[in-house]
Each structure stands twice: as C-alpha cells, then as structure tokens.
Amino acid sequence: MDVDKRLGSLIQGSLSGGLEVRLEADVSVEDMRVGKFLVVQGMRSRFFCMLTDVALGTSSQRIWANPPHPDDDFLREVLAGSGTFGTINLTPMLMFTPTEGKRETANLNLNGKSPLASFQPQSSDDDDELLPVKTIPSHFSQVYDASERDFRRVFGWEDDPHRRNFSVGQPLDMEVPICLDLDRFVERSNGIFGKSGTGKSFLTRLLLSGIIRKQAAVNLIFDMHSEYGWEAVSEGKQFSTVKGLRQLFPNQVQVYTLDPESTQRRGIRDAQTMYLGFDQIEVEDIMLVRGELNLSEASLENAIILRNEFGKTWITQLLNMTNEDIQIFCDEKRGNKSSIMALQRKLLRLEELKYIRSTCPQNYIDQILQSLDAGKHVVVEFGSQSNMLSYMLATNVMTRRIHGKYVRKAEKFLQSKNPCDRPRPLVITIEEAHRFLDSATVRQTIFGIIAREMRKYFVTLLIVDQRPSGIDNEVMSQVGTRITCLLNDDKDIEAIFTGVSGGQSLRSVLAKLDSKQQALILGHAVPMPVVVRTRPYDQTFYTEIGEPSWDEKSDEEVFAAADAAKADLGF
Image (cartoon, rainbow, N blue to C red; front, top):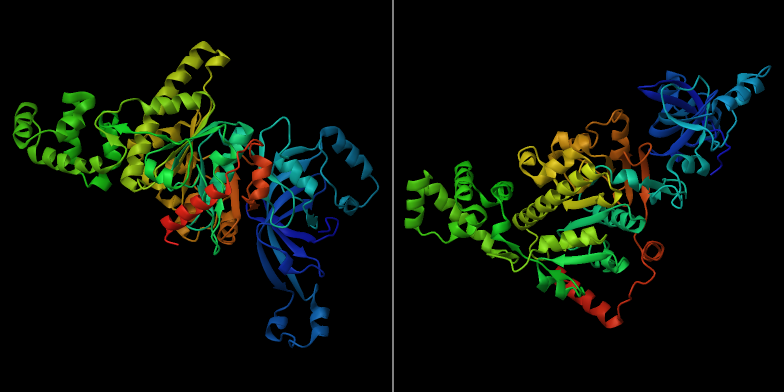
C-alpha cells in the first residue's frame, strides 16, 4: 500500500451525512472495500474516516444511453476519470488537530502559498490532539490511505506500559494491530454478538485470554457448551481441537464442573465437582425458569407463601408434602391447593439435575468466591447439564449470591477508602444472554441488575448471544463495548446500534462482514468504530499469550481426549 498516493478529492458532504469523494482515474473502485480506513487532509486537521459505501458515476446521461462496446478498450480509457468515475462515501470518526503552537506555525508557513500546498500526506504527530469530529474538511481536500502511524496513534499498541492494551485483530487491508483498552473494557458490561457459526466462541476465548494475561479483572465463566475451560473442537472440515483457558493459564484458571462424568471423559485434570442445594434456590430463581417449567402466575404466588412459611427449606418441605399436608397448609395459610400441587409436580424436574442436592455438605459458592478473591479465574462447566433449565437456574443462583458478596465488599470499600478493601473487578460471562435479559424477565434476574448498575459494585457482564434483538433495549443501551460478527436479521442489526449515535452509516458495514474472522467493534473500549480481521486463535497465539510454564500433555492424553471428543460428537 502506497500511503503517499492520492486516492481522490472531496467534492461534497456534511457532518451528519458523511463525505463524498471522487476517485482519481487510476484508482479502481474494486480496491475500495466497505470498512476500509482513509484519511482526509484538511487545511488544519487530518480526518480519520471509515469507508461506508462505494458507487459509480457518469458526467452525462448519454454515456448511460450509449455505453462503449465491451471490446472497445480505447473508448473506455478515454472516458475513465472524466466521463466515468468512481465515488466513495466516508464517515469521519476522529480528527488529528495540531496543538496551538503548531497551528500558528502551519498558518505562517502557508503565507504567500496556495492553500493546495498544504495537501500533502502527513503522518500525525504524537503531539497532535485526537479529537471527536465536530467539523468537516473543505472542498477538494485530498484523500489518502491511512498509515500504520495513524492506526497506532488512534488505537495504541499492545506493549504500551501505561495501558492494558490487547490486540484483537488487524484492519482489513493492513498488518497493524487494533487494540482494546482492557481497563475501559471491564468498566462496563460488554457484548459479543453474531449469528451461529461466525466464531463468537473463539472471539470470546480470545478476549478472556487477554483479560487474564493483562490482569485487568477476574473472570467467572458459565461455560454452557464446555468450550472455554479445556480444549474444544475447532470449526472446519478437518477435525482438530484448540486449547482452553486452563491449558493456557494453568496457574491462574480453575475449573468447576456440574457434570464430573463428562469432565472426566474429556480428560480434564483437577476439575472440582460442585453441587447446589434446594436451600440455595429462591423464588426469584424459579421465576426466571418459569417458562421452562411451565409455571403459572398462581403457582409462583403460592411459592412465595411457602417461602414465607418455611424459609430456605421451602422446596424440600413442598416436595415431601402429601395431598393431605397440602390441604392442611392451604386451610391454614390461605393457599391454593391445585396451584401448590402443580408447583410440586413441576419442581420434581429439579431432582433430575445431577448437581442438585437436598442439602450440600459444603458451600461451593463460597469456594468460588475465595478463588476469585485470590485472583483466580473460574470456569463452571455444565457438561451434559447444558439444557436451558439447568443453565439458567445454576447461573442465576450462583451469580445472585456472588453479586451480594460484592455489594457488601464495595460498600465496605466506599466506607473505609482503604485500597486494600477495593474488590477485584469481576467479569461474568454468560451465553444465550437473551434468555436472561429479555424484556419479560430482565427485572427478575440478577443479570438485569448487573447490566444496569454498570461498574457500581465492580461487577460487569460479558454477554455472548446470536439474537441481540431478544435483549431488552434498556440493557442494550448500557452495553459499553459491542463486538459484532456477521448478522443478517434486520432486527438484530437494529438492536446492535441501540443507543449509538450515527449508527445508520455503520449498518451497511455490519451487513457486509465476512462470515468468518471479521467483526465490527464499537463502544467504550475503542476510540471509534472499527472493522477488524480477528486475531487467529492458534499455536502462535498460544506462544504469545499463554504462561511459559504450561504443562504439555503426553501423546497418550492428547489421543484419548481427541477420541472422547469424537465419540461425543458422533465421529
């Protein structure tokens, strides 16, 4: 790429509608791709812009009516650049503006010269101010490819000693890293979106690795499909596996499992089995899974009556009741017999979950909290217990208690102001997020509370979902950084830009992403929206990001784990 080559001239535009650029005759429209970054050299500032549309134009309607013959190369060359031309639409994102002293120097240098003398490709100086765009360049300002220096000035570099930057990929047409500011990333709840098969799980694993490596926060990952803790099957025609977080960071990641048999079949070492007791399940948790259990409003109202009477043991007491006991209870407490019997019948399904016990010998949630307090990252695997009833119930029960402990820690820190009392920032990763955060249930789940609180209690969400349109609009407006792979549904695309100013110009960019290894990133952790080729999650990445003391498995263990994975998938 020749960054000194002029690509075209600005011919018209507006701050709200974008800029229209007419391409030079020797610049092919086929080299202009939606999502590409260009710079416009103005009189005083350089404007960093995203290409949002490409079009063809002609200077006369006669050319439309009588186009040159396909074999007439001479006539086509004569018309190119004068009679026929290409145009592109740019959306200004940021502007590099010289500091006051440099601006005065630049004005002095222009005395006695044509204004066009200033239209030379310049790399932005490190002392230039990086500002939001509140104006536009003048007519006939020249357009150039963005340089590597421009990208580094905007997105930083991964080894910056003053920031926790993490490279998530590269621009579409350059080999320069695009970095997230992880300190800003963990300040708010964030989302990874994309239709099935676009690589959401790999992108999630990539980001979690960055958070662990840069020590930006501690992670609690509810691993619905056993993809993050240990090795998982890679996408593609040929069978292969990719490493999990426990393998990359053996001293920093702990795996808990709700299905020890599945965990053992996959060859995971040192995974801790955990259980939940009926006495840990609240009525609010049952409300979340009312759809899966097909519970009526009357049954939930009677569940509250039972809870008020029996306290934490209300489920155990209910399941042990006979019809006569239910009748006596209804007579004394004004309950509804048919509703309580229906509630009892449907709660029997909870006994089928492998990890549910009447009472637990120990408090496993407190164990997880101790790990998080010690700076460990926790992956909770569900194995065969990954149906929506099981996943929604367990995640809500655990998150509600952990959030309560963090609230108390945050309140203690706010009272003492002692840095030693400051809680470690916690990022909770959930999948199928629209089931927790839809408009009907968001008020009843702890996840809706966390999403609206932002960083008030040092707890945020990383939501992974393929249907962002199913998430409540208020929650989507609070999502700080949105990393979006390909989406085709118009409602899902509209949901991504909820609460985003100027999102209309980015819709075409999102709709034209490749189905693999491309994503649109916008929000709190990046200075401007950007389309990236996502960083490969491969052996090179393992070497760069993982702990140097990673304990390699023997060949026998590798083959045994691969055979088990093939058997589970039906290979």
